[in-house]
Image (cartoon, rainbow, N blue to C red; front, side):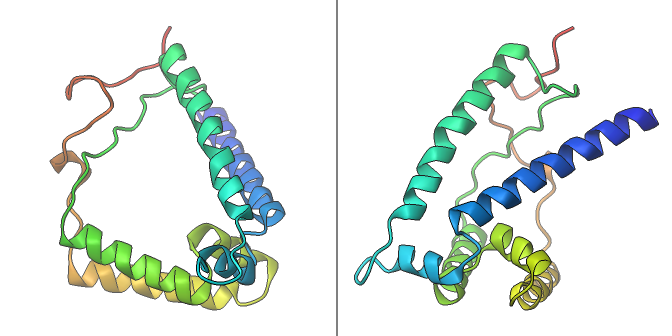
Length: 163
């Protein structure tokens, strides 16, 4: 049991490290580069569009492999995706995220990487933590069990690994 937990922790760390390195190489930890991407009316920098565009086929291949295998490499069921909920919480959260991203040029992944590598990332992560705490005081999120799953399989079926 402890060996499995170690493998899972090492895999999660490796995936996070690979993600952080990718963010750094792509320049997503540089707020000026992100703001240049968001500046459609000025000196637009489309390079981050290539980063996002490259992520789509990588994810599609990973999802295809997962579905063919019948489950994750380390076993266990695939977590269910909650049903899409289009409500005031989603619109408000999206608006706040977009405003913050547009003003600061930082979003959660690159912000955490910046906190580790120095710069203004620590201030960002502190603000992120305060925002999460404040949102939980304002409205309790619905439990995942209360949402309808949508993975292309019946609601009472989990995608389990093949034997």
